[in-house]
View 1 (cartoon, rainbow, N blue to C red):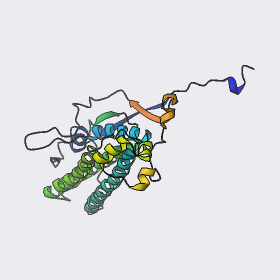
View 2 (cartoon, one colour):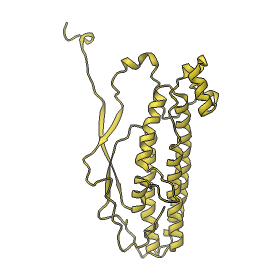
View 3 (cartoon, helix red, strand yellow):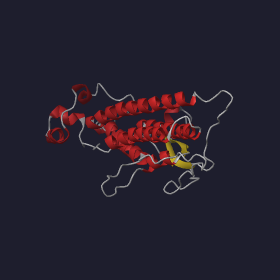
View 4 (cartoon, rainbow, N blue to C red):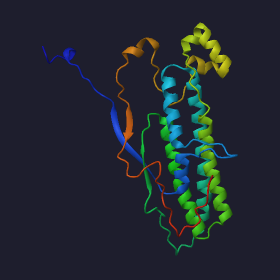
Length: 266
């Protein structure tokens, strides 16, 4: 019969979800864009560049590249370290703001014209970095408020802003070192020329990573070589660029003029 399940063909595409990130401070916006190379100062990729690397890294792990799996583990650890650094800074600024007299109520210092950036992220590690940037943006706002209300001095403001920015940029610079090896675990099992060349170029791998018994908690399912040509359309949730409400390449949030403590954090 025509309506029997065996005769039905469901051609489902990928799920899509429009997402955007709202930033309120110049400090966070600069980290999104990165830093261009200048005389005596190397360039550093921004969060958008980091996300692109995470997307490539996830595809490498999906293709059974053990080096991509090793890199996912390394980035996951670095993300945890960065989160801990930002959390420590958050606790310090919260302690400073706790000294505000009970008679004084401080509201959130939100930007009247924030920048909204469309996101296109296919890797969970990329999302984790976006959450860290959002945390840093919130931290910067609270630091500026603490300085404006005389809870911290300018030197403390600049030091804590720079510590948070350095933690994020250190994460991005580590990711810049990633390279796809072009090998699969089958190559290492056969100890062929590709595996030997990869070992020579990238070094030895921990045995559990090489065997695939230890992978990142966000590692994708491995697509074996024989099934690549017949791979079905993914049903994982991905994101597509939303209609941009501000040009991500030029728009920067205009920090409140009353909060003159928005110091350079580079």
